[in-house]
Length: 220
Image 1: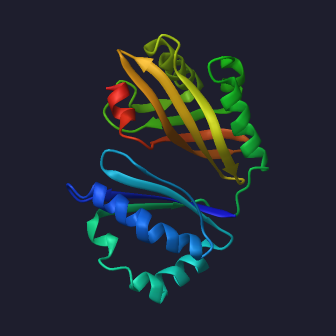
Image 2: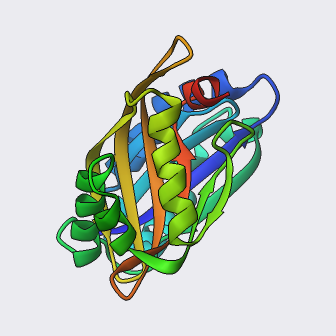
C-alpha cells in the first residue's frame, strides 16, 4: 500500500464547512474508489488526512477525472487557501523493519532514554510546528532526548503517548498515536502523528503533525 499525507489550510472562517463537506462528499467517494483513509482531523486552520492505495498516482488520476468527482458541487476546493501533499514513495507496510523500529521507540518513550537515543541518527532533526512552549527544531540526539524529557517535566510526568498504528518503507515511517496528559490545569487527549524519515534503520528526521487544535491550547 502506498500512502500520502494531505494538509489543506482553509480560507478564513471556512474550516467547519470544509470538514463537513469533505466528510459527507469526498470521503465516501475516495473509499468507493478503493482508497484506505485515515482521518480526517482538523487543527486550528487545517484539514489533515492520510490516503492509501496500491497505486496512488493512477488512483488519483482516475479519481480527479471521474464524473463522480466533477459532480461534487459546490466543490469543497473553493474553501481551501493552500494545500500540501507528501507522498511517501514506495509501498509501506506495518511489517517493515522501520515500522518495527517505530513501535520500539514508542515502547521506550518515558522509560528508556538510552534505547530512544540509539534509535536516532547522530544528526537527527525533530520539528514541532506552531508557537508553543515546545515548538521549534531540535538537532542531534542530545537535544532531542532532552526535548522529550521536557514533555514529562512540563506535565509533571503525566504525558503519555500510545501508538495506534505505524507503517513504513525504506525511507519513510508514519505513526498515528494518542497523546494524553495534564498541564497547568489543561487536559490533553488527542490523536497526533509523526512523519519520520529513516536512514539505515534509524530515525533521521521527525516532523510532529498535530491533528487537533487542543495541541496548541495544551502547550501554549
